[in-house]
Length: 501
Ligand SMILES: [Zn+2]
Picture (spheres, rainbow, N blue to C red):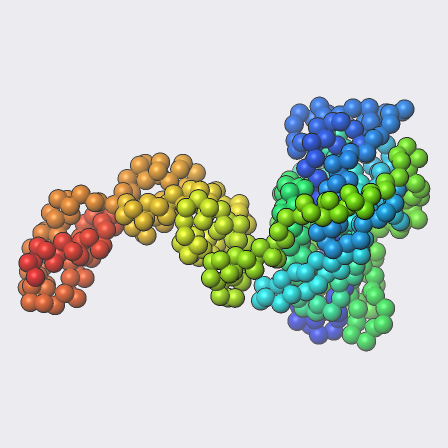
């Protein structure tokens, strides 16, 4: 049985405490091979098919550093405005974990490859917060455990566990912020916005597929509270492996309200790792947090130090793409967006989607209207990210083109989009299957117009007498008769023609 957890009202938390955050993001690099061996670096696959003596940690196997991974690490460091180490080493981080066959993780400790940077993060209302980066270091991922037979999929209650080492040795970069202070009630939003900005940056660098749902981007959120009159940081907890942007925000907020309730009653916070529960947005106790001393770090004797030449670093700097923040400014200019329109676009995470829809032939205004209004509502009601909706920018551009060609009305277009979202196929297929084409055949429309005019002779008389506004009633009747599949503009033209006005 889980004990009832006391939470403090959020407004009270902010009144009494200052939250302090620290965010650790692990990103899996998209190199062809693993960090220290030639095994394929691919998600999934038959268990234990992408392994070799090195990533299985067999005695005598020797690691070799993947140069592409170092290149990725340096490019990430540069994009985060970091200094790049002139000389650094790997270290062994010793701990036992069944899915880590060497019983140590090859990581970096006091000599990270990149350090002292920052990332400017834009909040929902346009305010920019600078998040300082402590370090970005290289390490390797672990394998995966699968606990079988229990109700929860966790080790507790499981009958046995299976181990898959395909992921063991996949290159990871861990990006660690300095403490983020003075964000007050916006701390959860800052955490989400930071991970979001980092994800955009990594995506622009093309160093990772940044799939939070597949674990290629994972966030650990350190949260502590300081009473308003305190001079020292409080004890922090570390909520591990939060795997969506929304969850990052929820996890931070939950920890703030939980810790505040404990502190307000004179209790103390236990330094520990915690797990985030997606279903109800709570966190639960994990293991007591180790300190660095527990890991007995020492320099890795099997790998040579890394000393990237300044020439190489400068060459890599030249490969940096346009940064997302710069791109936003350019897009605002090119699409003539007001600050507010740009903010709406950013808030729903639609910049890339709109850009891709424009690329596929739509105008910026058309694409923006669909993504920011109609589709954002759909994503919201499904509680997923906009990009996770089952419609591609190319498909949306196809729908928009059909509207522009007069083959769909706006109303019909919305139905087509619903069909695509429901998995009924491409826009053309949905139009076909649902029979949604606009009635463009004039003879069919004329018949419907004549019928409606005959049914309302007084209205017909008014139109004939010059009261063109009265045509609305006839348009309505025709639309009803054609189940909304008539082009209202054409119907109106035909009405005027038929009454001979
Ligand atoms: Zn291997």
